Amino acid sequence: MLNSSAQSADRTREYKVEVSTNDHEYKEVARGVLPDDDHTWTEVKVDPVAAKYIKFTGITGYNLEYAVGLKEFEVYSP
Image (cartoon, rainbow, N blue to C red; front, side, top):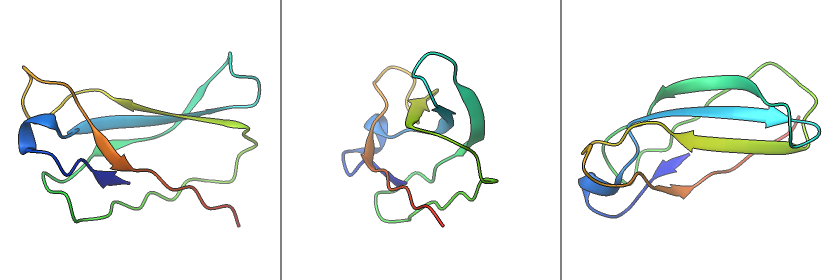
């Protein structure tokens, strides 16, 4: 994951990642905090799980008065 390149006020702080096989029932597989910059990649390794859908949720931002953002999200399968 790569945080937003916009100003710090638009960056995601706390996030969660969920997966689903049917787009109705989601299971949380990761939760954490992204760095307050636009150039540090955050890599999260999760245990293998069947999934067709992946959902990223920005829970809080670095400035609570603005929206959260994410520049890139990449998924790799073994």
